[in-house]
Amino acid sequence: MISDESLLEFAKEYGTPLYVYDGDLVVERYRDLFKFIPYDRLKIHYALKANYNPGLLTLLRDAGAGLDTVSPGEVVYALKLGFPRERIIYTANNMTDAEFEQVLAMDVVMNIGSLSRLRKIAKQHPGMKLCLRFNPDVCDGDNEKTMTGGDLTKFGILLESVEEVKALVKEGNLRVIGLHEHTGSGLQHAESVYQSMDNLMAIATPENFPNLEFLDFGGGFKVPYKPEERRVDYVAMGAEIARRFTAFTERYGRRLDMLFEPGKYMVAEAGHLLTEVNTIKCNRTRVIAGCDSGFPQLIRPVLYGAYHQIRNLSNPAGKPVVYDVCGNICETGDRFAEQRELPEIREYDILAVGNAGAYCYSMGGVYNLRPMPGEIVVSGGKVVSERRKLTTEELAVQILGECSAK
Image (cartoon, rainbow, N blue to C red; front, side, top):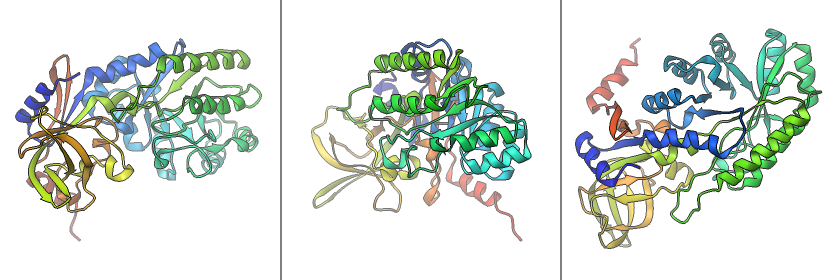
């Protein structure tokens, strides 16, 4: 892990706000999954949407990871980074006809999650090879907005529609090589993982889908965010996953690949957002620590009510004080933490927002026209990749350059 002393040095050298990623930890998390899940045909496809930093992706590419992509832009980006086509899966989500044709031309496996799109494929692209996404009918996740199973979600084909799926597959002479499900992000219960697997494997029979090459069980593996949270026993979970899948392949009649698509698990704990405090304000019942970042640069607390640990790197032994840690955006809800006890914060102290590697920079924007932070990737004790922060002048010129006068 990157030491707090090193983080302070990075803040001094590169300025704040700054994202710092531990590339070695990301690769370690990737390799851990092969230790946890003892199945010899396991494949891990990292969920690119979690963090698209090119330095991290290069490390994962070289380690052998595949990618789960969810937009044509992500597919183009993955190919430009040198990921082989056969290690990329594109999961459709309310895509347009033009997007479908664009991805089809890039020759990656497409994961189709609606009967509407499947009907079009059967008529317009007979003989196509594809994967089908089913709704596992299991609800779980760390927030209702990140649960992707059950009646209220837009994702996947209902399991009860399998006969209609088979009819469309037959009509279009389609070759279904994979089945997919994803239950949610930050899964809270191991039983949800097992039940989702069982529900998908129940329809994955030779009679329904005789040409299967893999089953893809999505991602959603949880990591601890709060200090009191326990780390999941992934050794025990992985053993049970392997046992169930091995038994399934025996029923199916041959061994298939088993895929998972983790994002948060692989990158969340490797990321830190460094921000400098510039204002201490006492508002009767609240002590506010104002810093030089804001919610467009790490939106999860505002969007999901998510908890991120915060450390005072400059004064770790300070007397505990309760703070609202606020950003520099013109919104009252612009807080990284509310009523959080931290070592005394002084103006110009550097704070580190933890677990900032997943769905933080990648969900960012330039609201209030504040540039996104710079990013560095650390591996082998040195900075191996850097993306600098735009100046305010560069951001303004970029936006003006994107507009054309009529």
